Amino acid sequence: MYEYIKFIVNYLIRNFKKNIMEILDIIKSRRTIRNFKDEDISDADLGKILEAGNSAPCAGKLSNWRFIVVKYQKDKERLAEACFNQEWVANASVLVVICSDGGRIKGIYGKRGEMYAIQNTAAAIENMLIEATALGIGSAWVGAFDPDGIVRVLEIPNYVEIHAVVALGYPNEKPRVAKLKLPDVVFFDKWGKPEKGRKKNRPVANWLILGGKP
Ligand SMILES: Cc1cc2nc3c(=O)[nH]c(=O)nc-3n(C[C@H](O)[C@H](O)[C@H](O)COP(=O)(O)O)c2cc1C
Image (cartoon, rainbow, N blue to C red; front, side):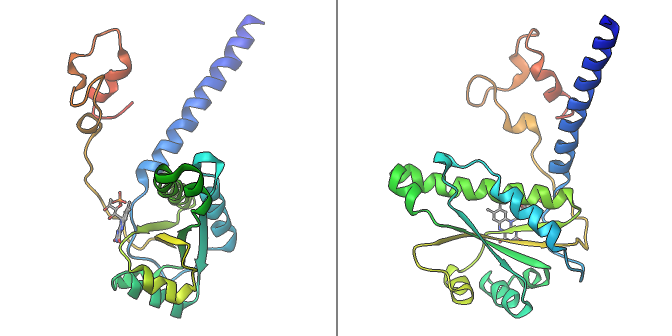
């Protein structure tokens, strides 16, 4: 009986760890895609991506994010123009314009609410990019745009802020990006303090030495 329970517990722990790894693999494999295949993503997949966005954490339980889905080619071209002529944006299958209706959150939290409004939409965007990656769909977070140009196309009221354009489509490239490694960005106990001086009985740091491979 004891052996049986031990087996079940070990099995559950192993699978729990495996699931964590799979999510990390998806996160690490996400890349900004700027070259898309001429192939549409399905509404079912788009729905999952929007659902992922809407499942993000939100300060004060106030989901200030609003998503405008744009599929018409002419509108995508006008949005690409508003993104300071990043022409590749128009070749995405779908554009999702992420807006913030932040009246309530700013009303309740004041100056901090302005920060929350931005952080909430950023969390929603990242959730979308990760779900897209999991579905084999390429994505790009586009933050360089002229808001007036976007307002003109989508008739967005003036109390709403535009935070980003997310481009979605099947990837036609496999870009590589050099990023800082964990030991370059993680400090221990105090700003700027690397892991080296960490005591041996604090094993959490060991995998940092190995270059971020747990
Ligand atoms: C807030 C924000 C704004 C961005 N705006 C643009 C943009 O306007 N155009 C673009 O090509 N990429 C944009 N990117 C994508 C970054 O260039 C990209 O994330 C970075 O090069 C790292 O590559 P990776 O996403 O593949 O890890 C933006 C990313 C973020 C987070």
